[in-house]
Length: 202
Image (cartoon, rainbow, N blue to C red; front, side, top):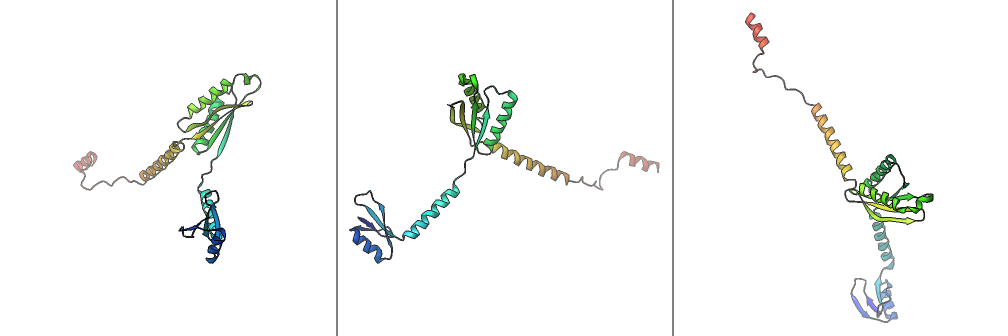
């Protein structure tokens, strides 16, 4: 086997016994890292420390992974306009929360013979929210249901954050105006016409 030292240096081709003696002489472990290679590659290392470092790397990787939430909205092919607007509002809210949205059209009875109605409704919804949502999975028929998945675009949540900042800025400006006081009149200002009349009568 090809032997590699703990610092990555190439030791050369050694028999298994020679490699074991070399590792044990350094009070370390012999770990086969590439068994499929010709010849196989083994490395001298502290295996317990190696396992610990690998576990720490995996833990950090899981910590930095962003959790993807999937919300679901269910519609009927013959949904009323008001109900559609309500459902669309939910989709917009979920997308602005950076969540994916699974939109399901539920067919009943003879509605299954007209799947194009469900597809048209889903594509209409996708068009209505295209500024903040993109189609990640196109409409697919699954038994009596048709499913489409929308994912947030880079614009999702941006306008909401900007609106919050504008509101905060507006509040600060109002508070600032409330603290202002009218300047006191200067003593050098000319007297009013009424004061001049009183002086003339005197």
